[in-house]
Every structure is written in C-alpha cells, then in structure tokens.
Image (tube, rainbow, N blue to C red; front, side, top):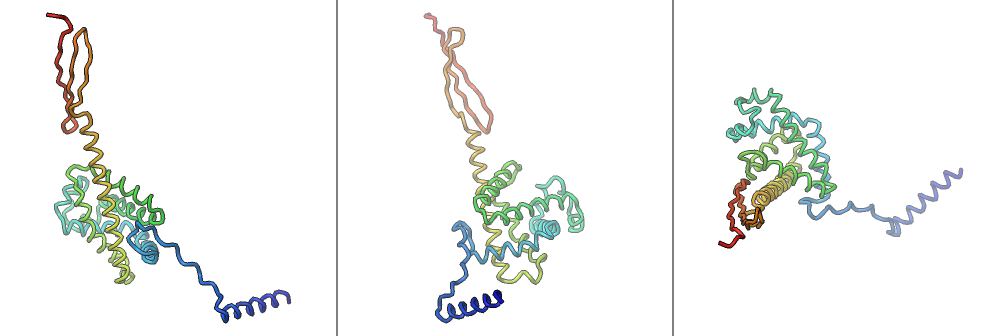
Length: 236
C-alpha cells in the first residue's frame, strides 16, 4: 500500500510540475573541445559509426591500400616488403600487405578512440608523423594520398550505413587526422635539422703541449669536421 501511495504522490507531483512549467530539461551534452573540428553530435556519430569499421579493420585496410596503389602505382616502390605485388589479386592475398594495412588502420582506430582526450590525440599523431621522417624519400604530402582511398574503403565496409551525413563526418575526421600527422612530420624534420646543425662553426680553444690550439668545428648534413691551427707559446 505504501508503495502504491508513493507512486500516486510522485505521479501527482510530476503532473503539477508539467502544468507549472517547472520540469527540468535533461542536461545538455558537454561542448566538445574547441580544437575539435566537429560538434558533439558529429563526434558521437563518428565514434558510433567507427565500431563498424573496427570490426572489419583488416579488410578495410587492405581495400584502402589496393585503392591507393590503383591511383598511385608509383608508391608501391616505397614498400620493400610488397613492392612486387602488381595485381589486385596479389595485393588482396598478401600477408605482408594485410599486416601493414592493419597497423595503419589501428593508428586510425587509436586516433578515433582518443577524441575524448584531445591532448592524447595530438601527442599520438604527432609522434606517428615524426616517425615517418625516418622513411627515405617520404614527404609530408604523401599523407594526403591516403585520403580518398580511406573514404572509399570505409564506404565499402559500411554500405548503406555510409549516409551523406556520415560521409561528411568521415571527411572532416580524415582531414583532421592527416593535418595532425603532417604537423608531427614537419616538427620531426625541424628537430632532425636542429640536431644535425648543432655545433656549426663552433670554436674551442685548448692548450696542448704548450701550444694554443684553435679548433673550428663545422657540421654539414650530420657530418662533423674539425680544422685546427696551432700557435706556439715560445717566443721566436
């Protein structure tokens, strides 16, 4: 009986609140970090949609690289493990390609999962971008080559779920990811150049066996050379 009375009292109270217009609105979602390029709703949609990709991450990644090599066959030469794979069939069945494609998609996966912690997102992709400075011949513009193949592969995986709205959100997301990778790559180059040029034209003086020695150190492309001149302390 007490429970029923409680329900009636609660129902009566709710009706009065509605009539008086005092019912509190549900809390609005927290605004996204201003550094994010989309709204809270778009971020939610992106994260929810990505679950479908993460369940087919290897297949999506392989399809992405097949489409990449269709558009840019010359890029195959940058991959020593599978540069001989000239046909779609060879690429689709290559374990080496599947392994690399999965790693790339796992980078995307980590990025999407980090959208709630934007500082982690930036740090992760900046470090990933910087690592690419170690690849001979790699330039920052090559990151952009993956944009269209990525979107096409995602479209194939999601099928009917790849609506016009979802497509727009994926375009925003991949652009954001690539821009951040490029930032990391450029910073990595700057750091390498800074270390490589450190000590250029530095001069040191020393006294060896009674002679004043001036040594000029120059650094070019990471190679160091020293030129020494000596002047005796003894009067001639």
